[in-house]
Image (cartoon, rainbow, N blue to C red; front, side, top):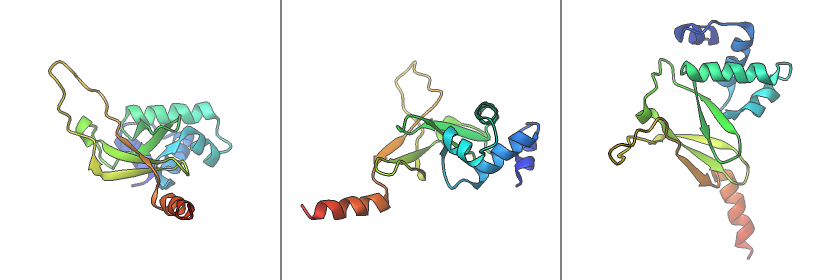
Length: 144
């Protein structure tokens, strides 16, 4: 599905800037921060990118989550996605390289909360070392 088709499917008017931002998200290999998008879209104003991403989040084109890096990360929702709390999946944040990875095989729901609690979002982030950094970390510590 093209960027324009995705926007139209979610009843979002496909302006030139929205198409640029969505295309950058579609081309990313994983979750990205606002700063990452800014770097990819060098000529587009930061506030324009933010407004587009916020609109995409409101229309369930993307979801946002905190990964512990100090900035929100944004990730495309699957095509035809309708947001349910139990749809969430885990993410992995590498403390060494700072990259964030999706772990779609690890569900973040359903939740069993005590009576009276009503969740509106779930954020499951596992922190540690990605495979590449774990190997490097193990090599550095094998000399000790």
